[in-house]
Image (tube, rainbow, N blue to C red; front, side, top):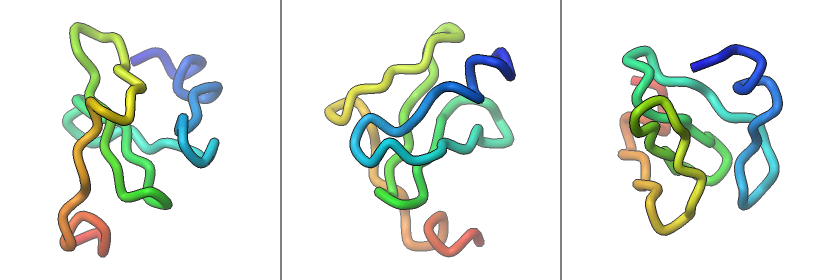
Length: 61
């Protein structure tokens, strides 16, 4: 994921910042507790494609 692209991307719901996961497969919005997938290098920024974070992920465990 290009760092310049990551700098301009925002959560489509709250417009907040997104965090790239360590395995670089998802962009996480902590505020909405959603993880948006990255498929073939392209972020899928659709609420219907996002998964809800687990309790441990919300607490940074």
